Image: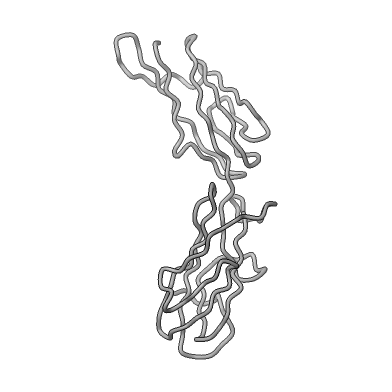
Length: 186
């Protein structure tokens, strides 16, 4: 073997989630082969962040980065893996993320929080940038306070954090005055 290639979709694993490494090798003749998994040796630079099994399954143990090393036939390769939490948008302190149906004038105290692969909130306060794809229907300030402005309109409110990526809340503005609900899909 002259080269070992290690790949992982997006080089990321969700917190408390798993992802399978893809390993290929290039022979001296230039052929690309898939080595047998039982012939590979996997290690992690930080097992608290990214634990890797003998089969090449990476488990995201805590947020951060770790380098996964693979050895095969005397050749080694490394891949830096980012373990990240998902960003979720909820209404107030609720833990359920969904679509919201609201009336004109209703204020929605949206909250962005980190969650693991199972949707369980994790420690850490995200610094986010809030935006609305339809600010004439639903405005949102940088504190996450959204206000429904026009009836029979909808908007997607987005919270974006640096490493965790965007999270959205879909808001439908109804004509009827009612408390914000998340029980009707939009």
